[in-house]
Length: 275
Image (tube, rainbow, N blue to C red; front, side, top):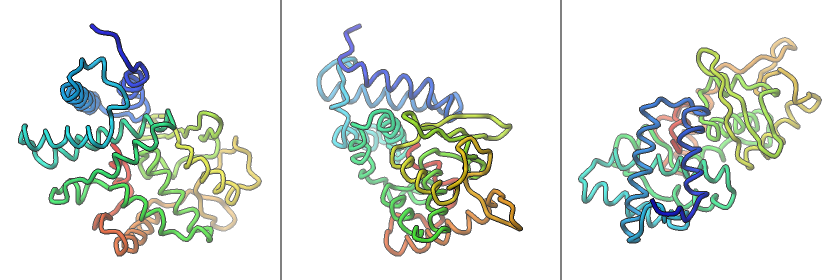
C-alpha cells in the first residue's frame, strides 16, 4: 500500500463515514454503506483519470470538473439512470458540505458542487431534492425586519444546516446549543435518541442575532424552547403544522422568482438537501 499523499482528505472521509453519518445523523448501516461505495467509486474514478493510485488522490482533485466527469460516466459508460446520478451527486455534496463545516477552506468547493445541476427530467430532482438556488430563494422570502420573519428564516436555516426533522428542530432548547469555537446543536429524535450536529459559521451568526431578539434576557443554560409562541403569557413550542403552512407560503412566493423551487416544499424536504 502506497503512502497517503493528502492525509486530511482521508481523515475527513473516515470521520464522515464512521462518526458523522452513523453517530450524528443516525443513518442506517445500509445507508452508510451506500455513501462509502459512492466515495470509493469517485476516488477510483479520479485516480484513474489522473493515472495515479487512489492513495495519491488529493483534495485539489475534488472539484466540479472531476465530479461532473464521474457523474457523466455513470449515465454514459455504465448506463445508470438520472435518479442514480442525482443520488451520487447528493452523496458527494454531503461529504463536501461536511468537509466545509470542519475546514472553512473547503467552503468554496461546496459552492462549486452546489452549482452542478440535477437532472430535471427525473422525479427525484423535482420532488425529493432541493438545489442550492432553491434553498437560497426560500431563505430570502421571510421579512427579517419583523419578528415573525426572523423566526421563520431561523427555523428554515436550522432545518437546512442540521438535517433535523421538524419535531427535532422545534424541540431545540437554548441549553441544547453550543456557540463557542466548536458550535453544535443537540437534537432529540424519535425514542429520545440524542445526536449532536455541527453548525456552520453563518448559522451561528444568525442564531446569535435571533437569540438577541427572542431571548435577550435568557441564559444559554435555559431550558426554554429556542422557537416559541406566546400564549396567555406562557412560552410554548411552535406547532409543526404552523411551520409547514408558513414554509409552503414562502415556497409559493419563491417559486415565482426561482424555477428550482419544487412544486411541493415541506419541512422533511430540507433533510434531503445535501444528503
